[in-house]
Length: 464
Ligand code: ASP
Ligand code: MG
Image (cartoon, rainbow, N blue to C red; front, side, top):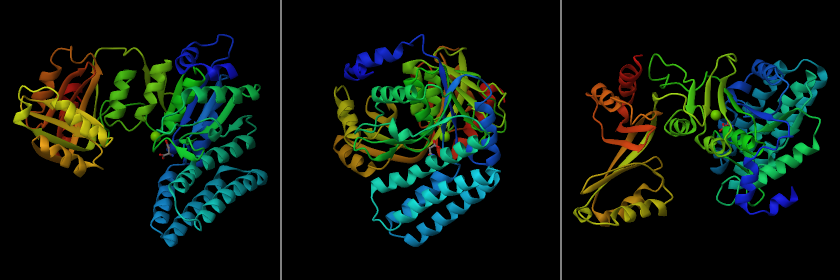
């Protein structure tokens, strides 16, 4: 392993791609906030992780609502509002105290759980007295996953389920640009696993990691899925199971349309498009490790564990449209310039402005005299507009929604485009992106038309 560390990165990657045959296969099982959010849900997780003999790394999120509360605590502190920070800390502590009363039965387990809560809330109360910084914010946000995994560990012990609690902060690291250090994660994790050879159940925290300064950091909101996927890549897992409270990715947004159905199979590309364009069930970044290391991802439902859920793997399984998804809070920008006519290099200059402000572009359409594009992060909008103005007239439409029609080879599937537009005849469509990939047709509409659009497409494309 020490040699592995010295190898150039591309060789390290190549080594990771090959499975070592004599090594026993392991799987990753990740449980989200609602799956751990109630004492009886933890009981269900205990059942699910002991159902088969396969060794596994169990990744937990914080209890539902905790990260939001922690982020509000942090927010109050950043504004110097200690009173409301303290109120929120106390309310959260009470929530945990009630949680453990129902979680464990024995006096011994209860006392253990109580001291874990005391330890973490003492930390939060100390933080109240320290001056706020970004590093402190990250420390606060990390408490949720530490609490959930520690309490679950107490629960497993009470049930005599042998397991090893692994601190994610010992192996999960990101570099100075916030990217996970895949090679180093693999080396550290396999060293740790080596030290616990007899164990078959490992328990660790999603979301949290260490940054290049060695400080506590995180993989951004919803990042526990990403943790699970990075771990699955690092250990060449047989599968990465993402357990949530819905039976897989659905063909449409259940909050917007009456009937939806789970999608049984998706390719990595399709899943990436759906995760990115609005399907909240999976963190979009968790697809690339699966694609790179080629392990399957399964989206499963803790409330309905026998349901097949969604299987994501390299092959798409079938051809045609599989789902529509919508992404809100999109800003469309149109740059109109007669100088674009017959000119080359114009797009580069436009794109450079967005690059300068680290703002990703989602959709692009061009005509001979204008280019329209969309962004989902308007933090630097006014700076960007200022720099674009010398190129021509700039128009901005905010509160737009991208609706994506995702599937396998849909651009080659007969009549998809016709069906989309016949069904949307009453909806004003601002932009269309077709042919960028074989998996996606995206249209941009004003958000006020989103619900109607999703309903019309549900009928037109899925007959639902
Ligand atoms: N607890 C974190 C969040 O709520 C990470 C996660 O649940 O994936 O964002
Ligand atoms: Mg999540």
